[in-house]
Amino acid sequence: MRTAFLFLFLFLFHITFVFSQSKIQIGLKESAPLSEEINKFFKISSGQLEEILKGEVISESSVTSPKDKMQSLTLFVAGMHPRKCERAMRKLSLYENYHQYMDFIKKSLYDDSTQKFSFLVEHTLLPFSMIVKFKIPRIKKEGHYPFIFEDGFLKDLKGTVIVKDFKNLCLLGLKADWTGPETVIPNLVFETFLETVGELGLEHLIRVSIF
Image (cartoon, rainbow, N blue to C red; front, side, top):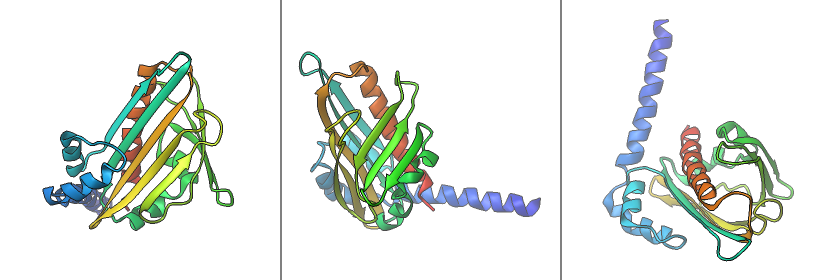
């Protein structure tokens, strides 16, 4: 019993240490190159940059109706992983396991031969289940990885996954843009959903891939 307690204590201490390390290793001297990298995809505010430097995840979305019967969205999510990108992506590249990582993903499939990734999303903010399909390689190292939703819901949505080393840390981010036929989801609900799952999703992916 005492051995089990000691193991649990050491395990929790190690997790706390890792998270504290992820925050204290990001200093102001990193702000310029970090801001330069992010601004390639998203005009980041000083407050948002400060949040990332503290080890927090930022998520910003906008959903509008540019004209009648049309809808448009943008989404940007970013955060720092406390490991180098190659280490972080060992687990994050296992797309078929994403339903094990996040509660709102009920099913996830990946085909290496076609590089097609699909998952079923269910969330209290959504009036219906959503099947998302797109093509993306298994990301195992740093780089910028464009993707597109080839069919299904939000067809023709385009985006980029950002995986960039900063010393012993890894910037993880996603930028997405879409304009298409109006969905049945109201703008404000859709916007809130995107920001919520973006932030919670990346936070959880970072946690599950630390070890």
